[in-house]
Length: 376
Image (cartoon, rainbow, N blue to C red; front, side, top):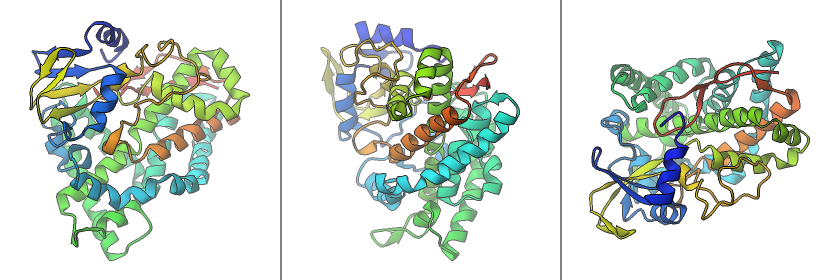
């Protein structure tokens, strides 16, 4: 399923718009016309009991914003949203571009390499570390701890001990940064959290760690997969790669197609707060509903020839960043990083090509690459 989910999505889209799995006691929605209004209706499709289906993962993180509904969700979001607004994000472009060139330098010198591990996974981490106020000298350590923590989302219990230990170490590390920013505030995200108040009260330690962690993770994992998936797809479509290399003004359009065609976030989930009737069936109150965002992006009722990859197609609104109150606060930053990454690639190494077998990530919610060997 993780290697190639699309045949399953096709079957659901055609024949099972509302699917129930008795083995997991989970419902699934897949069509665009059902998903978009459901994502907007947080009163009916609630995030308050967590958005993952892996048992115990939400408890490992603590009270984090993805697993909340308004008003608390909105109050916490407001503490940091100014760091990620469209107006603010534009000022980050020189920083993103400088990091991208720095990473490409090493790959150029070697004639290529692992563009997942050494470019697309590192670029957004460097950026989010700088924005959050995490010292770049700690970047590799924090990146590895976050990687180990996310192994809990592999779909098995094999890595639970590793994941828990990594979460504990990250909690200790983030708490030290928060304490430092309370003593000496700076213009960074952690300072905004450390010194922010809601109704005149600072946020507690549990929410503080969860906010730091989710901003760090959301600030790099999705963008990393966006860039890796894009390079892999373009290497498989050399005609579009060649055309895009000489049409830089089309790169923002290409980013939207990448978010649609190979969605980094494949699904999320919610809990129903009331009985919901859809497609002649009733989803009872208290049911877990998987929202298959990537399936909706292959819905022929909305996207013409949806299984065709075309970076020059006219974009339509996709669900790659969710919708409603939980729409990703970092969407402007992800778009910026995706655009700049591709622009720098085409400027420096426009004729990249596959140079070995790719290795996929095994995170159930995410579609991305752990390894992408390219020659330049």
